[in-house]
Amino acid sequence: MAALEAALAFARHQHAAFVNDLSEFVRFPSVSAQPGHAADVARCATWLAAHLSAIGLQRVRVIKTRGHPVVIGTWLNAPGKPVLLLYGHYDVQPADPPDEWRDPPFAGVVRDGHLYGRGSSDDKGQVLAHIKAIQCYLKTSAALPVNVVCVVEGEEEIGSRHLPAVLREGAIHADAAVVSDMPMASADQPAITLGMRGALSFEVEIRGPRRDLHSGLFGGAVLNPAHVLCRLVAGLEDANGVVSAAGFYDGVRERSRAERAQIAADGPTDVQIAEAAGVKRLWGDPRFSTYERTTIRPALIVNGLTAGYQQAGSKAIIPSRATAKVSVRLAVDQDPRAVAEALSRHLRTRCPPQVRLRLRWQSGARAAEISGSHPLVRLAVAACRASFGQCPALLHCGGTIPIVDVLQRQMGIPVLMLGFAHPDDGAHAPNERFSLSTFTRAIATSVHLLALMGGTEIPEGCL
Figure 1: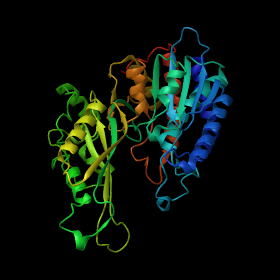
Figure 2 (figure 1 turned 180 degrees about the horizontal axis):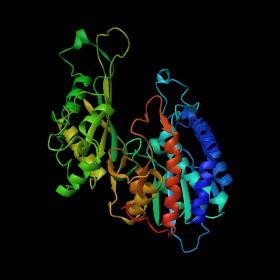
Figure 3 (figure 1 turned 135 degrees about the horizontal axis):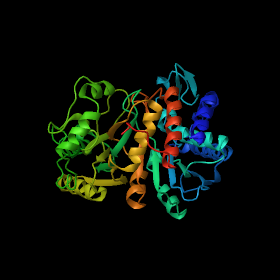
Figure 4 (figure 1 turned 180 degrees about the vertical axis):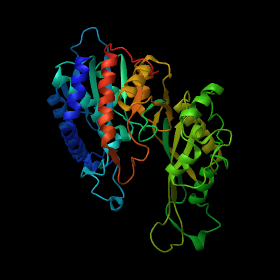
């Protein structure tokens, strides 16, 4: 307990310095999706590695990949204690549109109790909270309650393509993993995410004539690729969003009445979801609640459509090609390959012979889930209770973190999904921010979690 108390005291005393470190971290425009920021991503990785070394982690490495680097640091000096893998990512989404930001997106400005900047909430603030908890122990007791492997990647926002190979080649082993890249229940109530959906993305391209045609000369005689694309995309689902492709729902786990009751008890209401989305009316399959439709059920989403003339005014053409970018959020037990085959069959059998269909499959990840009764979850409940003063909600999340499935299913490592983002942080949107009071409590939560994993008794009344 002395080590725990010393670590917590150090966190309180170093609050301003920790905020400065977060601000410096956010100032790197580490946008993994844009080649023009590749050097910025690499600089951010170098800074992070130096920071891990400075706080006392050992064997800190910046591992180059065919994409962006992975930063790994370890502390393995606690014989007989479990090994905890702490995962996060330092890459961020693009800051577009820049004119909607109140401050420059990579300025790391502190205002009104928040730190503003792209990546502040997703995921630099969350991952730095765990790093600071490690610092608190190493700077006060020169030891951690457990062994730790920190893995922070630079490609989460583009599918974590190279991280699985890095983990395999590095022979990374752990007894448990913690991922913090998801929301809390509210600004005051923490949350443990029990499940996340998987993802599958692809592009549909329809090609017709070799070049754009004069719509007056050929309209009514040449099948328009834009019309075909619209019909094919619209035909993927019915008016309630139920996907029409045969076999699409194969494998989707059916939930018991008790499971659905628990999900409803801890999840947001329809009103809260509508407010968060900024809409007056919600939509979807009436057989399931809104929260179920956005977390434990699959969904097909058209992310973008492109065809023909896009500039001001009009242009009388039949476009030679049309494309749609489509993504699917997968439910637990759905196989991305089987879903891709079902959608491919559906589109190919309905594409008319006058045009050519091309499908480009870009990424796929399975859904992931952990039982609410898992010992790792029970420890996290106690850690949240100690730092936030209340037990966390047990939530499901509609988003996807590809590496969670890799850790759980392929490497056999149970994953605790413990998020510290506020629902209104604006992740992926202009004016993204991270609450500094939550940053403080997140550090304390991680300090407690490390202690509990090292053998500290779980306080009574927390479970």
